[in-house]
Length: 162
Image (cartoon, rainbow, N blue to C red):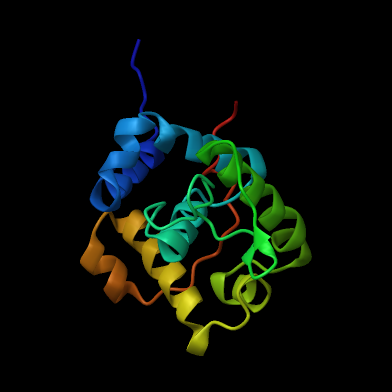
């Protein structure tokens, strides 16, 4: 029997190793968890890691003991906290799907208008697009040079059946 490997998990493992290798030491299957969360919510598997990279350097700069890598509810009124990274990413996926994607906001530029509307000159969307492209090409420089607008909805061929 031939065993197939999901290339998405490998791409995420390499991306996480590049920016926060300590995270994979603590959460050795986190890259697999991220793909499962993306599939569950029908998101492009690159979206949440790209947002986490833009918001927190992929979980390096987060409020203490919050597990909040995606910048959810971090404002002057207080900060949302989570019991785990998985809970943070799953909550973000659910919110993005329901409040953004299901309402037709399917690119980082469109999501930015509500997620972080005060981003100067589209900086947030540019960063998310860059990191999505970096994961896609598994190459930091190609990600920077790609200058692509990514669709954040998973294509049917991208989602593995559970």
